[in-house]
Length: 384
Image (cartoon, rainbow, N blue to C red):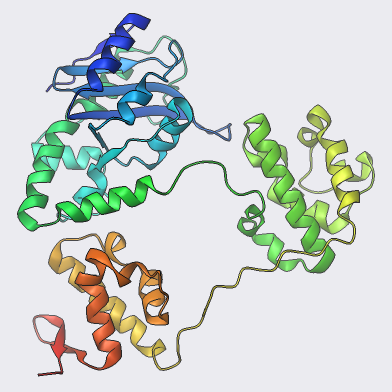
């Protein structure tokens, strides 16, 4: 399929496209969006492709909810680096793809490391993509022919790429692995952050204690909720420094509030200043949330020295298997397994088969790592 495209210009065309896509066994989908000044991503263009061609849908002209039937249908949605696009689709269509194949994730099981779409198309199909202007304003109308051509390329070859990657995965016996990891991506629902937890992202807050920490937590949660309500970035409401300044000074008047570092007139818009002052008054005497403590945060003393060695072996094993390390086992995954956490990712499924069980055997003393010249670290069975 080439990168020629059809513009959807009427409700009838869009309804016909959605109806046909709902019956397709596989379709490609991508979005262009902006979120630099907003809390939520604002969709600016939707690109879809099936065996008939490429179609560009202008969400500024159409309600995208007809795509919900497509996403929730049995057809396989082929996407690349889909996490943010799924957030866009969830917000604009109210649904996520029921069946997903992410080409970037899949490529991590055949020797690539977080490849761009351009890298994959060049490496697997010998196709060169044109360069995109990273500063393109996708919300501006009319879109140029160059913009539309580039947008079409994002989906024009995805179905062909899926076929090539799926064949490689099948030969290596990794089809189910990719299905599982794409399912994990789907099960991590996109959406607003928990307002009660956002304070943990502000580094300066860690220096506060007692009532000042409690107020900082409250102000950070208020800022997050207000950002969601107004659909702006939290820092547009109040900077991180402003959150800490307010918590440290606990101002009682607008003059005191606007005189603080990191606080400017934006917080006063639509009564924000008075709301914040009322929040400060109501928070008097409040105790802070407890700082997060992970269960069993420390590894057993006898296992700490082996963590770097096991991590090195895992990295080497991933290179040998042509699997991107982050998809198989992060350092946190290894630590969770060594701590004996019941929900450790390496404790079940394909991850357990590849590295989880060998690590357990090392810990139990039935296997060990040895160094072999020319091979690096080698797993040695001690039972025999």
